[in-house]
Length: 193
Image (cartoon, rainbow, N blue to C red; front, side, top):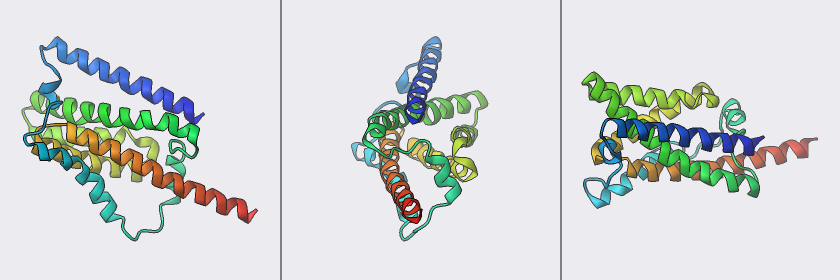
């Protein structure tokens, strides 16, 4: 079931990305027009890692995770080697495609259509949050905030590449941390029986 979910995610995200690329071509645009290019300065590649670093700092010393949230993300968190074989490509795909789609494509296109960069910023971040509705209310809010932080990185650096790198790193590290938490919880439940 989990592997089918991973496979479905890969197909859907890449299909949507292909449609966005096609739409860009229809209007004579390329990926550089929506931020898939080098940042203003080479050292800005590291800016993408500021987002997961902020979340790590915000969670220092935190020992509990909402049981409801953990139950919701359990469906996508890898817990064994066969899950990781699927999860890593999903994390790479999410980092590359979601940053292209939400920060690059959606933010720039909404801003162009409305004549308002703040509208592009807000709408792309909110849409990113709702795309993660399977995580529940906490996940939607957290993901929208994450989207806003990555949008800020994009606007500061002029590139979605730092966002892609940070997003990939964030997903892999979250997979590791939540996997460990789920295995520990399962072991406690097994010992209690």
